[in-house]
Length: 468
Image 1: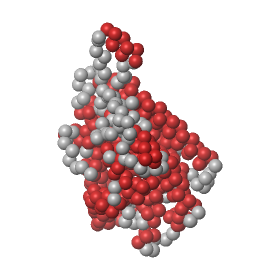
Image 2 (image 1 turned 135 degrees about the vertical axis):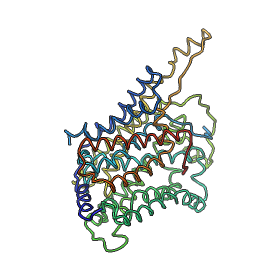
Image 3 (image 1 turned 180 degrees about the horizontal axis):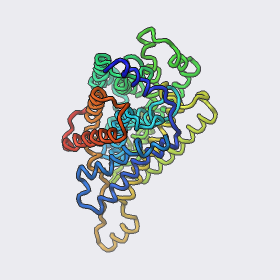
Image 4 (image 1 turned 60 degrees about the vertical axis):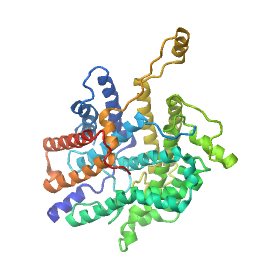
């Protein structure tokens, strides 16, 4: 790759100011609509679970929404049962991420959807935070399986977590070597000279361990807000924001200032995701709160009187998600309206309070949307139908929700798909001048790329290739 093209490519993805929250929400709604269409088609066509049809219904709308279609706008729980809505949410988030990381290199990708330089909102800014939020949701699993894990000895737990995240950290360091070695175009102000998203993702579970003693006693949603406020205080009062945006890169710390200074903000987003996970993963959204209350009153790790759940209480979880959705959107509105974090606006670069609240509000909204779709297409029998069945001796059938097969496959091997997408994106950028590609060429490459990623996930849909 010539140095001139490398410089032009870096300029091509730099200096963006973003779009509006409403615009990003509308683009993202393509994911919800595609799931609605999938379930509708599946109910009428027996071949609804084939790869080509699944790709056409679930993936192509996402690709179109961010390219040509958007161009004019420029009780003691021993195991956590699968939640199809969460599978769908995580897989669609992954799909949007892997589509965007390649599409952004083509002129067909609207510049107002690319990552903003310092302030603003965009689809790719949303994707980074949503990735962290999603990791937070699933990190609730060990806490729900064994709440006593929060009070287990600190050092052994920290050591075990370190071993678990070492592969991700190694990938982050390997990416640094490969990018520097191949002179691949890079956006230095995104995370820093050596820092990258893999390093951030590896460090968050380690930082979470430091919060475990507090998580025993403080509501997780409140803890997330406190971490976010602490981050904003660090940015505004102690001058970290000014340092991140203006300081020269003269040392290892200042060279990676964005990655380091944004880390507490990402921890807040991670904690918001963790709080959401404790609501939607157990059969009852009150499960973890009952544990906290029991521990606060007695110091015991038991749950007191045992309760049995024949089915997940999706309606209760939906009501709580709706409440939090309203709360987080209101908080974001207040933060921006009162300019609590400054007049500049949302900033992914330093992960300020507006960005944290936006990510929390968006993701709770869309998880709620997927959950409502599950409840619509797989309704539970009404209490009246159950009562009539009890009197007549009839059997009331209930069809459990299932995630679309392709999305389930992507979710099962999400890390493999993400790593492969990064490698393929690099190869494509090294073998063609993407920023000069025509609309037809760009859509052909993106279509083949997206289908190939889906085909890999589909091929290994019954096998988990990597487990972290």
